[in-house]
Image 1 (cartoon, rainbow, N blue to C red):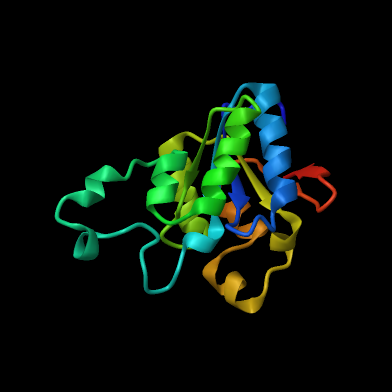
Image 2: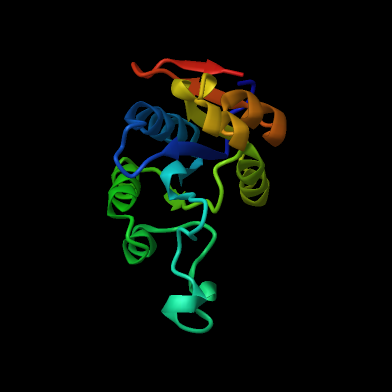
Length: 164
């Protein structure tokens, strides 16, 4: 990357299977003094919202969910594992939050990256060759590069970073 990022969006999952991405993102954000948003890819589901909706949580509650979720917000949404990941990033000195996307594809990622002013997206190398369903949803490194128009850092399991 030519310049240091100011806002990084990094893939994560409730079960922390993208730990290498999270750790590389924390280190990159700390070094650049950038804001970090962990993007919980498991939150997106076909027929359900990742956040409590008005239908079951009461009228007007949609306004209670900010566009960047702090650990307490994540706990209220039932995402304890991601809340702990945000806490760990904060303990490391990073201004960290998370987001629970509505959809998995690169178009949703692009919309969120634009809204947040993200200038770097970090993804696991597994997304270079996703399965058929993820490919159809546009959940791949190639789709992220094309849709977001932002630099994408692909992180290997050993933590090596390849910028696209």
